[in-house]
Image 1: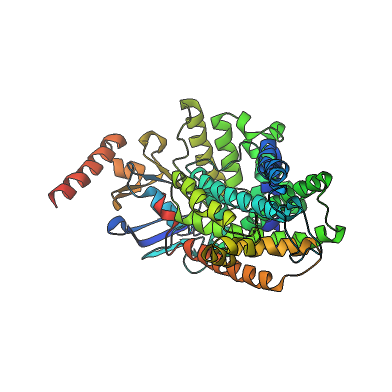
Image 2: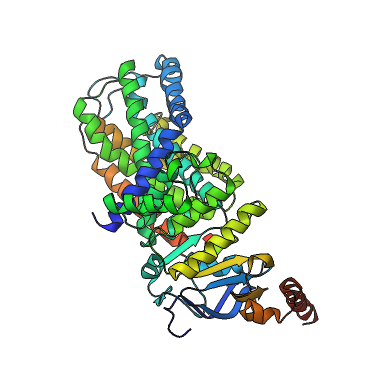
Length: 249
Length: 263
């Protein structure tokens, strides 16, 4: 593991909305080529952590680095190595697939031939080359997600963040997206951080971080955390224990 | 072309494409000022004559007077609508896509404002063409000089809109912004009546009109249309643009966390 390129490093990150603490002393890392699931119930702090990694919020403590670039000190360099899939769709439904991709290419400073090549490659990756000119609103939910994943990868990021990427997808599309992103991590050496509250999206060999009420409850491979039990039961037990401890305290 | 300019061009192109896709938006944007010009001004032409006021060399009919004000109206409404779009985009995730592009935040917000300005100027030029067909014709150079004036007013409105959209977390409250910001800004300006006419009615209201940065935007456009530079209006507009721009940047600063309220 020490040979893997630096992917995402998170050390002692804290964040509070006024008096309400959203994240407390969160530390973990995702090396290149690794799929890491960030498992947590609603309100665990997953979205807050993503907003900190992507520089939308300024960190209040701790350190975050993307491919070795400190998000606080070198935000532009860090963003250049980061691909993000937002929870809510960031596609323009009225514009065509290619037009959406071209906009994203421009946002990364790609123009002319470089942009055309990146758009074509992304359409291929999404399996939507034939639908380049079709409006995004005519795509299925699964196709839109594939397009968004391809868009997030256009600038060749080292780290890919996905915030509950399967929300609203049917079972078949969900399984396909889960498999697709696992393959991306393995084949292209990307560090993937996948936030979810669904344990069946986690493979036994994945890295796993369980977050609950802003604190890390478990960290390791999914198989280690489960310890031979059903991961869902372990997840529910851990988050319930957190709730009990909070009530007692 | 440097990466930052590519991003600026990409943002402008996207907003233009979105605008052109929504034909209804151009129509809606033109109906309001056209009703004022073709109906309201026709009715008022008999009631109000505007005596010789710079930059006009002769007595003018009311139609001629309000055309620059209506250009200002287009820019004001469109700029605010873009800001409203920003609130909507913030919910959709598009704003996050924009703000996570690898460029300084001020550059991304400026690009967004420039994009809105380009769309506004396009609408204003279509309106000026219709006004010319109606008989309100400025010297041809005036139309060229008016473009930078319109651009500056659009930047001021855009910066104000950005600051407001950062302050207003819910869409519902934006209707309030329309009522409490847009309408007062429009009616307390020189768009529909010269400030000296207002002074006859109420010196206090006239003072508000004179302080309103929108008044200076309208006057800058009015003078530009007749090939004149209103230095005072230019200075006031630059000052207001800088102030609102600084406020917008301050409000969108991640350390202050305006964005985080929503998520």
